[in-house]
Image (cartoon, rainbow, N blue to C red):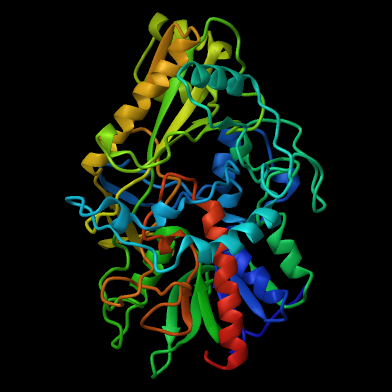
Length: 518
């Protein structure tokens, strides 16, 4: 096992081992760049995995205190993971590219009242080669000749209803789940409940792929249960190291030549804001005042159909189907942005708590006894960036690390409610078209799992935090690697784009290191 001295200032420190951090770390290590990766969570083995959502929730969810205000869950506003692999342990595997127009939100949608829209500082064509790399690296079905997974019963109901309404772009989804053995991992055996971590490793997670590959290079060290608390800098303002609390609660510092932050938006924002100094009184990379601002998620709701016959929606991959006809921008619908419809299963426990909260007796049991007759989907739409949606530090409350508790403030933009209502109406029509005897909406009940935008990329240092490579405008050897970079979110799941950006960033960091620029 490779170990680097904490005084070794030649290493690149990567914070977080999820989709962004592990990809950057492995890409650099493969080119003989020494990397230390700090991961706040512990490492789980396949023996720790269970196809039990409740059990796995406790094993890998980030449960440290967070406060939600506005139109979000007060006690659990954000769902991400605290474990090696980060939220790639929890994700569904859905891997769809952003559309070109979604990377030009300002140009496409114009001036939307209340929104702070921006175009990306790179084009779709510039990102496309990295999408190709990411899809091949992750084994995304339906791309590069990789066979799609079969559709389960939940998909068959979904597909039939969509076709009745005239939809045509329907398939079993582009997912980073092996349809056959690939890259030393087995093909999917349809265990179901993919968000429990994947007991056999058929689903791409950096815990199974990027991290072991990096460790094999001898240019990579993973330090688990090491919580980054401050990024430090020298007298010139360049980043010089990262202070962290180790497994024993001891404060340590790892010196660094450069730092890449991939902590998911809450922890990335908190770390930058908490790293205040006389030189940077508002936190690192925050001369624009934009760190933590423009927080985005996705417009998200669920639709559940009570079908006339058994469905057994829990059998098969989690997001086993998608309809993409509505993901274009069509202002005639009364809103801007696109919509995805994606199949999804829920456990009986989740249905009981969310589908009919507060229900008791026959009203609840009459539905729950027909759990095997339920079909379900998510409707998934584009969120609008708003400057007031932001992550800040609580002025007095601290957590077990002594860090200020993050406060996540989110207010729904009026466009979002219009989009959601349209999408749920269409979802209801899909299920009713194939005989549903009841359709239930699930609204305002999900914590955010797709979190983006709090250190947005841009060309103007006065209105953005990073350049097109995730390099902060203020500090040349400090990079942001995760979904915090997104100026807009489209309607597609973000992980594939995060990986593509991380691959692009790794190329740039390597060039900067080898040229002596940083």
